[in-house]
Image 1 (cartoon, helix red, strand yellow):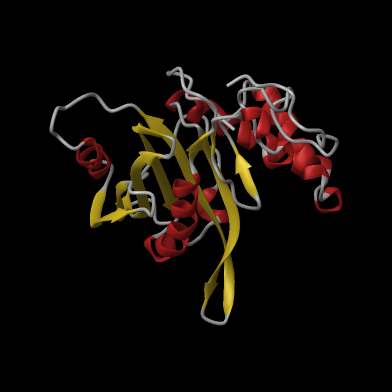
Image 2 (cartoon, helix red, strand yellow):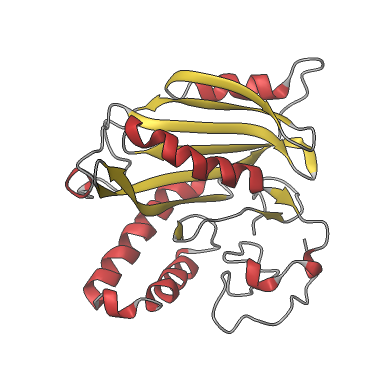
Length: 254
C-alpha cells in the first residue's frame, strides 16, 4: 500500500509475491528494521543474532541508496533457479513506480516513456500489448550493466554469493503501462536478474507485479490482512502487517 511521495495520489496497491523483501516503502529505516525483524522471527530457528543483524544492516544500506529514487516498492525475492537436474540460489530485484507523463498533445506518452526505458541498457526485445480492460503498454527485454556497486553497498560480496552474476550484462526486463484506476498515470516496473539466463523466469514475476498495480477507491473496504507494507499508515499505523493485525481497517484516509 503506497502513495507516490511526489504527487497527490490516492492509495495504490501492488501485489507482492511470497518471500518478498521490501526495501523502500517505509517511512523510516527504523520501520524497515522492525519489519525485517518481524519477518525473520517467523523462521527464528534458521537465523542467529549475528545473521539477523547482517541482514538488517544490508537492507538498511540498500534503503539509503534506493529510497531517494521515488519507487512505490523496490525489493527483491530470494529464490532458486533450475540448472539441469539441480538448482542454484539467486536474487531478483524489482522496482515499481508511478509516473505522471507531461502532455504531448497527440504524442503517445507510453512511447515517450519507452524511449526512456530504452536508454537504460541494451534492449533486444520490445513488444506492445493490450490488457482485457483496454489499456495498452509495452514490455522490454535486454541487458544492463553494473560495473560498480552503488555507494553504501561496495563491501557486499555479491560475486561470492551469486557466482552466476554478470555485472556487464545483467538481465533487464521492463513494463510500461497505464495505471488501473488512474489511466493518466503510468506504471513503470523494472526487474533485474543476475544474468540474461534468468531474465525470462524473472520477467514472469515482474510482469505479474506490474499488472497488479491499481488505485483504491475505498480504502476502508480494502481487506486489512491483504496489506503487508503500508507507507501511508492508513491501514497499519506501524507501517506493516503484524500477526495481531486482524481487525477491519477503520480509516478512510487515502
